[in-house]
Length: 244
Ligand SMILES: [Zn+2]
Image (cartoon, rainbow, N blue to C red; front, side):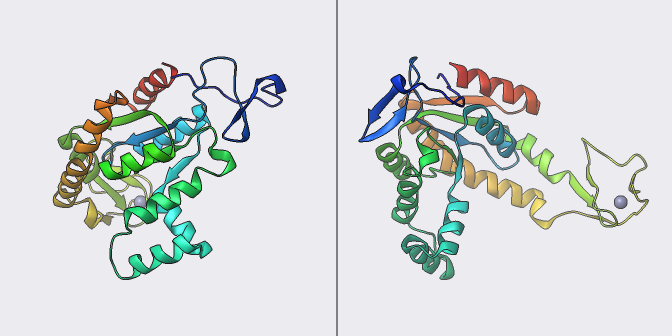
């Protein structure tokens, strides 16, 4: 995929083309400008960091349906009011509401270069709906073995005195049981970082994502990235895919 960055004063007027009744800037090379990217990754795989880099490189705004739902509820739009009803009654927000939000989002002016979808789609039905609304040219799945994620997440603990973050494997205290920064021996571990919780979140993620990954794979859009490497190495591999 070729990524074009829009430079100030570029493209010249001769490269504007009419698309769906509006003017679209289009560079004279292969034009992927209006296609979107979908990013998958299990919790704890560093998806947030990589999403930030993809936004930087491609200029495609990051879209999270959670953020969009909160924004629509806060703005009191019609879809926001419907979503709020479902959220308050403890139910899942139905697909048609989510899809409606995406439909509105892709019409915004900053979306004409495509979007980076993070945490969406979650189901094959949503992927099918998305394909009707916004062309997706690339799906990146960051893959990390469960064992490694469990190790990354469950090893975290913080100092109750100063908030310094430690990790059993990656950043232990210099003297066991004593904070390097403030000398406190009061440490906290988050309850949702327990191994059991992490494993059940991972199981839910795999159950949800496997059919979706296959769906995109059948369409030749899926790129699997080994997320066990360093943040920079994973970023480098993603940028190579973006350049293809
Ligand atoms: Zn401390």
